[in-house]
Length: 201
Image (cartoon, rainbow, N blue to C red):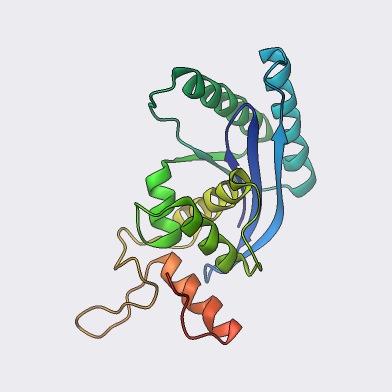
């Protein structure tokens, strides 16, 4: 499954495209950020964001768009900008015939790290590990977009587990059987291929 993840924003809109196999292994296809200056007219900023997302969809042909769900914050202007960018992304996806899934930041953290309270650095580290990269995509908006894409693919097409076992990647159940979340399974697989014992938290 090929999924495009969008971390919406007016100043920086993160875009990540990943391929996820049935065994939940993920490969980076494209990552980038669409930027617009704060002093530009709002309608022009939204046009640039829309054109950027549309160009990536046209070039890489994802099957699904995973988008961060807008939630209330103290800064109303930030929420409005995020919501406006989200609306543009959903419009482009609908026009292109893509399925859209919405995910809260906590949901993404839970999927990627196995812990809903993970910090951005932890999410970035795990994104790099799942995608087999030397380091997390930069800036953070790009890493977040990749995390959204991975989360969307795991939940929609790779048998996402309903709840994590633990925040650590190799934890087994008390019965001795291995029941891992997609994040934990991907982490274990990546460690085996890299020949490492365990990623330190």
